[in-house]
Image 1: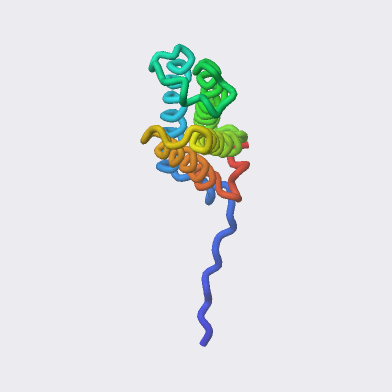
Image 2 (image 1 turned 90 degrees about the vertical axis):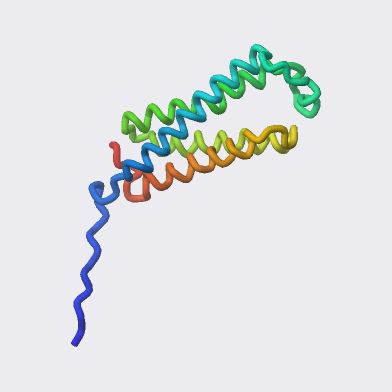
Length: 149
């Protein structure tokens, strides 16, 4: 006697809603990284930490001003923008979160290649960048990447 196997329900927008916990974690990491990048960017711009300019010897920079500006533009703005889009449930939230996470991971990867390992914060921020990209993928599965439209 053959048993009947229940078929899976079709994936709909209702069945692909992001989990609240994953979405909160994504937004939390984006805000954390974004606010940290705003703080770090302004501190670098003002040279408030008095970092040695020897660390810049393999870069095109002679002061910490431009690295501070770039940190604001490359990391802070995308992270905070992605968090706002997630909160607004925008159709652009997935791509913004994915790009923000990859931008942070790329920022740290370049830092490690050019300046080497300098701070414990570097691997932590690399992990956060990758976690943002991964959570964007989890929160917005293939069937729901247009969920908020």
